[in-house]
Length: 185
Image: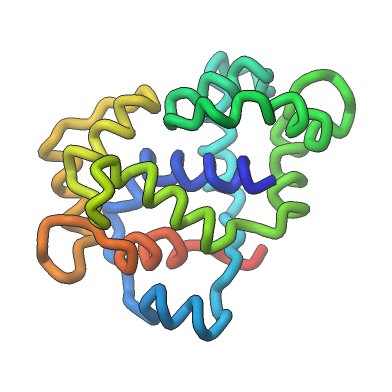
């Protein structure tokens, strides 16, 4: 179920989560060493947004092809072979598709979103590997997801999260942004 969690985070970024100002409770080092906040549960509205992004033809269910297309858009082509296995586990009614109820159930069974999923999402955005996400990198990922966003809009997103004022999003800022709106139910 980590694949669903990873993709959920990828999509979450494309839905302008950068626009809300984060609060900084702990650094990522504090979270890792304390064991606090090691998994997170997105709320139902966020899960619906993610589901709708996968469901590109808007028929209320995700096909294996739609799932694969989303993986490709996220630069996760190496995961395509896992899709049939994912569907075997998640498709509870055996109709060959994942409906919203199954999607939510898979997320719950998967135990939420792990810190490692957030770190993987960060690495997807940090295309040059410098440990920071620029507005240009945000724009590129959003474009791959089929979202339209101007460079100026991407700069505003980054600036809304940029706590240290360097014009980029580092791992601590990214972690804070990704975890602040999640609830345990």
